[in-house]
Length: 476
Ligand code: SAH
Ligand code: SF4
Ligand code: F3S
Image 1 (cartoon, helix red, strand yellow):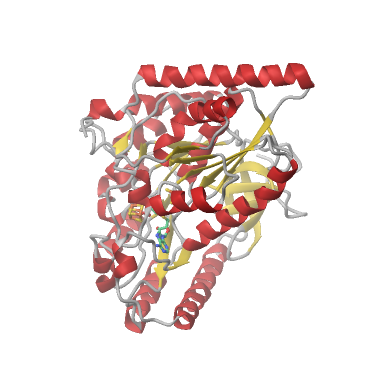
Image 2 (cartoon, helix red, strand yellow; image 1 turned 60 degrees about the vertical axis):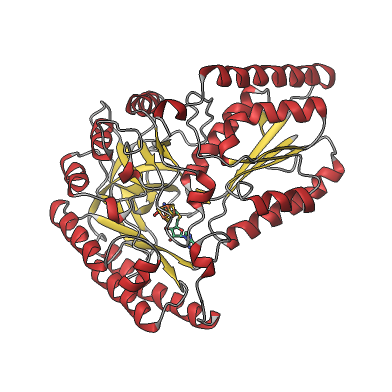
């Protein structure tokens, strides 16, 4: 794909702006007649990139004259942004789409739209078409920027709208955004994935890697900082391949450095980093920039070289561990986190013990653990898999037990010490009513006499669990 072809042309985006204005006029008329403003609700599943997309959907809906509803119950339009990464995620979405049929019976004018990664799979969009006739709009990841046209068509022509064309993907700059969180900002720096890990559906539903221009990323980050945002999260399926598709002079480390060098008091996090492309330069960049968080989410997936090969991950356990050692030496106190899949097809007890050993060597602060879920169309779904479910479940529990003990030990080392945290919002813990995050990315429950949300605070850690630290604001 030529770089110039990647960007959605200005005229095409202006056309969508025209649809936003037309839908807004329809909704204004409705308000004039009924005295009531129409409302919309966007529900989102999946990764932070999906959340960043949902913020754009909300931005477009506001421009179309909808007010945001707190949930789906009263909303005139419900958009569900879906995730296809595991069967469990898809089942949850289908359950919730099913539940919407009751609301639709009571209020037939309600518009229901299902978008994102699930309908980008042909079999799933066919299923939505066939089995969920009350879903009005179905759109894939590539159609996000055409949401206004789909709404207009539904409102004016009153028939179902499907926009699920498969393509390599585009970049649509300048879409309106409505952000829920004013302290943390999600910034996609690239879209898509080229890695085709053998178990993963993402490359099929998100298209090929395409990087935003550095100046577009920096402009978005500056605007976030101007609006009071204190935590910038740079997002991509593999941020380490940033710029490769487009032949920019900048790689991800350069972009990270440029973001950190913007003026202001803020912290920069990023995800995700594929270990095969994580470089010493990246680690040196984190080490030499105070605003880069001292943490690294480096998904290893398995601690068996044989399984890593079958997963098409392109690194060995030894490669991975040498990267960890380098990062530990360069960034004192760095917190590692990871993703692990248990029960990949053909995983033996020996393979699994390799994973357990690696987890004990690295000592992650926390782990995201998943049981393998076959995804139709991926190579791993065709691989022979004779491990009984009970065995996979038992391995999964063994891994959690080992990890929880490690997390508890690592967290105990913070007790009595002071940490800098960013206060982000309310928590559900009675005596520690503020939710916060340490520079290293640890979830923190905070107690404070002051109104500190949105500020960096120095706090003393009182106690901990394997999942969080509990800390008191020292008032400075
Ligand atoms: N791009 C990111 C991951 C995106 S998906 C990366 O490469 O790290 C998030 C996690 O879901 C993956 O890291 C993997 O651990 C898990 N995952 C993906 N496909 C899966 C599948 N078919 N079954 C179980 N877990 C899966
Ligand atoms: Fe999936 Fe691998 Fe791409 Fe991550 S890098 S999104 S796991 S294919
Ligand atoms: Fe899920 Fe799509 Fe993200 S499949 S993990 S929402 S890219």
